[in-house]
Every structure is written in structure tokens, then in C-alpha cells.
Image (tube, rainbow, N blue to C red; front, side, top):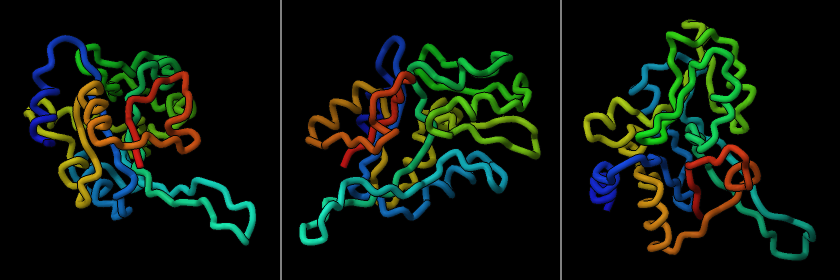
Length: 201
């Protein structure tokens, strides 16, 4: 299925939105995706394009009742938003959203390291590289996509909880699997930026 999804996404004509679907039900928080991302992109200590955080959802009102609480490990790549707040905040036009595939990229040659993008992003994704004095972010491994490969985090996931593809194709796959989309407060909630990454449980 992942191979068919990848092929269908690459072959879809016209503008598209590449993105990720993460099934939180099976993520074990091993951070293999984080390590694979660091190796693939050669990022320094403190710069992580793919952080994994832990979140609790639900309520625990009465100790006599069964608590309605669940904890999730949540990978946090760039959301490659439809209306990126980081792009709007950049004073030098260093951030672009590619029309052909919806990937949001930072031009390091133009970046002045002001970090306005990091402050503007509601997901806290852009990372400041103090050594290079520029801001960096997840590119969905665009250099791998150009070779017909999936992002490193997707290929490395030991629990196979991450899927890469075109937004419409991934949405169809989610429906076929009857997966339930999850809202984790700032993730999955209504957002003016239109995040493309999808989470299910």
C-alpha cells in the first residue's frame, strides 16, 4: 500500500499538496524518525526538524469514575500549511510555498536569521541554527522526493505509523481505514494557517 500510494502521488497531474499522515495509535515514541531526520539533513545539536512530544487528552473529573484520559506521542514535523504564517512573517521573502507540490521551503541564502518565522508559527516548528545563523525547517526531504523516494522519517518508522503522499490520496486512505481524525488542541483544531499534516487515533 505505501508503494502504491507513493506512485499515485507522484503521478497525479497538476498542482498538489504533499503531506504526512501520522497514526498516533501506534506511535511508541522511539524517536527513530527524529534520528533519521537528523542524519538525513545533517542538523546540529539543538536543531530538530522532527520533534516528538508527549500529549495527554481527555478529562479526569471524578476519582470514582473511569478516567477518560489518553497519552499520545506526537511527531511534530513542519505542517506545510496552506497559508503559512512563517511565510507571511518573513521580512525578506526567504520562505516560499511551492505551487507544484505545496512544500514550504526556506532559502538559506536569503534568510537573515531574524527568527520572525519561528515566532509566527503556531506549531513552533522553524529552528534557529546558531552555527549557520539561519532558520531551518523540515522540507519533507525534498531532495529524496526528487529521486522518487519517501521522506527519511517515513521509511525509518519502526511501527509504520507514518504515511507520505498527496493530500487527497492520504485522505482517501484514512477513510478506507476508517481512522478517526484527532484534535490535540493546537493540532487538528481550526487554524487560519491550514496545516496539511493529518493525525488519527
